[in-house]
Length: 90
Figure 1 (cartoon, rainbow, N blue to C red):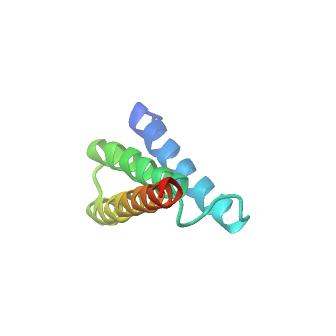
Figure 2 (figure 1 turned 120 degrees about the horizontal axis):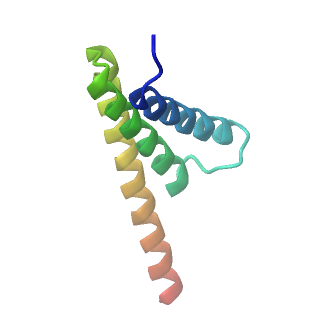
């Protein structure tokens, strides 16, 4: 087996997802915050890129859902941030 660019991209995605989860467990990152969801979304996206080259249906399905849920988390974090700014400005 040769190590390709797709493998490197996929491994970077795995690293992002795992590091964000580790940071959450070590209480270094807020699970409701932007950074956690953004790292998960980027990790899932990188994994999906690698899966385009090395297709696996089950992995694609979980990564699509992981990405969608993470993007929802990014959106929610943005909503919370805007609400806090509005409260401060009031």
